Length: 258
Length: 327
Image (tube, rainbow over all chains, first blue to last red; front, side, top):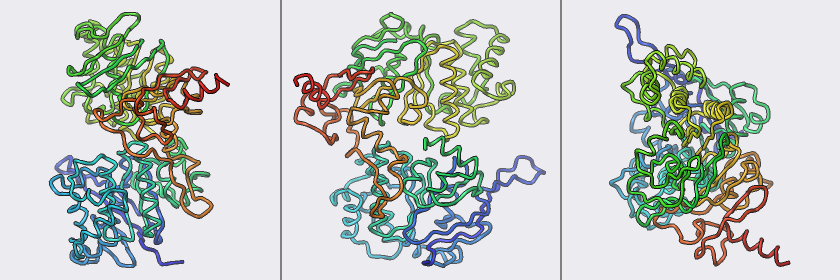
């Protein structure tokens, strides 16, 4: 057994809600409650659940955008929250993220080549046009597209750009938060195939978050089902689909038409 | 409601091309396709709500009465009473400054001339019908105080207020979680059955349409490329676009790993939906179709009856048909 790439041990994250009454303590929302998981290099883990179940908070914890209130996040054996800001930024070249709305995550006033190279600059690598061309080719775009602006692309192409930016530093882990949810079904299939290609070419591990169980099932080896911040069921995708143990998982299966 | 060769054009961009549809009382029709394929434009046609810049031609008949090109005040008499519509984003369709009860009671007081207390009683009955728990306190709440699924139920109640004979639902479940969406679909089906109300269900989600409807129309680039009984069209699709759409949907057969240990890939339709003003003149799907022949880009395929009520517009089917007839 190889050493795990990513380990979460009993991670919780709570948010304090706005105070409703002057003399009562403010309510606390537990977005993620005591979740543990491990991910080996090159593996895909799906996280499913409806909105508000804590999926995205979990992604932000994995990416060290948030600090857990309890528990630890270990990436390649290092506690990310123990690193200094500078060291964390350098470490980020090994784990990257793709978001739902590619238009919102690309600077509309910069050429996409500049945006794609940004992680290289931020992590102290050299800003190399050759590498940008290489990833553009990898995600199915033309090298000349580096000179264009985000508005010149369709939604699916923009998501390809966002993926190119995420893999430009040759990360070991990609966190995809609802990366295909905003796309039409034919484009969604193209992007899912692209992610599978990249995974095989680069040996990329992936945390794939979606509310759509059918999408998760087609790309993930293992799944974790979340509800109200709790991990209620986890295991092999095929096992979860064939014999879900939890009523909630069953209802998600029915809802996604599987 | 009957649509005969209805087209909508915005200058040179044709958003809808010669659509023919017939909606019988109490039946449920699904309209599927990707964004920008003309689904919503078709829905707006049924409501007489095409934007002013759009030029409508063809015939739209409601209970035999011709409404294409009818002025706004004529359409107004039919909206809410004969045809009503619900939208994708329920929050945007509700006035955030008004209590839910006031929003729902308004059309009852204005259109039906009910007194305040009679309107209130009707609103309570409607909330009960669409499955809103504790309707009494809901009437006093504001839209932001209730969940997305409940808001969509409020909008359905609002649409039902004047007992329409046709309800147009434009992506009613897209903004909702899968479980909630399922319950809304089942509610719409039940309402259509108990009220003998026709339902036009517009969605890009094939699974939702399969569950909700009896008839289906598949749209691409402003054309209805295939239509027929839902089970027939989704079970044995004939148009390459319908086949591509069904294949692209992750399901049981394209999951897991192949014999070589590599993950199975999804079937894709190459390229993306082109903008309206760049659509090919012939078959709209040419340029993306994997089985294209020479005549596709030039000549528009005519709808061809394939038996069991299934109709598709594709040159390949026409060829196969002509070939079969000759031999």
